[in-house]
Image (tube, rainbow, N blue to C red; front, side, top):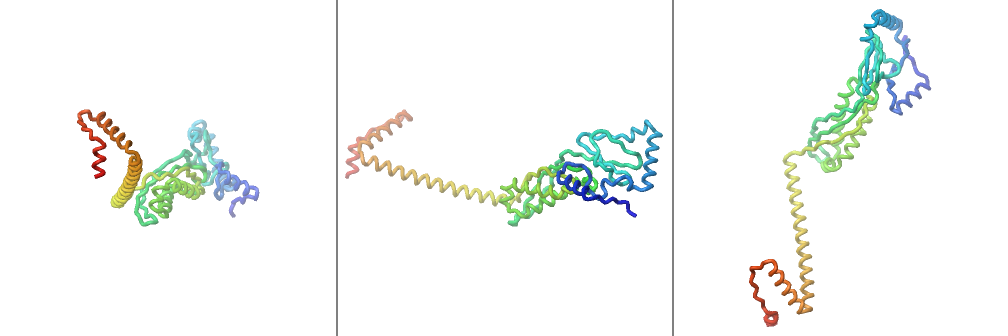
Amino acid sequence: MSNRVIPDNSQLIEMENTKANGNDDRAEVIGAGTPEGGVGICGWILTALAWLMVICTLPFSLCVCIKVVQEYERAVIFRLGRLLPGGAKGPGIFFILPCIEDYTKVDLRTVSFDVPPQEILTRDSVTVSVDAVVYYRVQNATISIANVENANGSTRLLAQTTLRNVLGTKNLAEILSDRDNISTFMQSSLDEATDQWGIKVERVEIKDVRLPVQLQRAMAAEAEAAREARAKVIAAEGEQNASRALKEAADVIAESPAALQLRYLQTLSNISAEKNSTIIFPLPIELVSGLLKK
């Protein structure tokens, strides 16, 4: 018969609460936290022999049995293939029994990796090469060991797939101008998928979007043509405004003949101040007026 222990309702409720809080290192896997009686008679015998060997070889056995993990590490211990109750150990000193216990160190620090450039076909049928960087950390050491074979490698492969799937639904203009929203959506998607692996994805950033050379030339020609069109429109508007201002000034001067002569004298003053070598022959305004009337 199987020695598996089925938790009661109160234990199930407690496990769901700790899963919602996300701050407990206890294993959320089948069989986790099973009492030591589940190992059977052979397990008890092997455990007793391991303790006897440790006691007989004191103090030399302490060099093998005592282990230390750093502040940023946790140790997941297996005894006869079963997870020990209480979750991951550390930081500090912990004790293992030789021959029957095995442990794995898990680094809880934030890890970053580059997603290799991915050739992506956008929604508007443009092929681009996009690479990104992902920041993640192990949130639950026990789950990251018991629920997935290689949590780090699985997260890297999932990041590549998610990058291709998300950007494949976007236009080129959205990829170039809306990187923040795309990064946020990718981060939430990765975090939701890796939660059952004990991984917390903290940040995703799109590093570079590389376009084909022909497309770059076409976009550059389009941008240059648009700038030239805007420049011509601005120049035409300036000429129109200048012509309107000259017309208004001519109308004002035409109403007062003395204003034309004052303007003439002001022009002579400016010429004499800027170009001293220029020789000016004043022409009477009356002569000009007579010629204009004829």
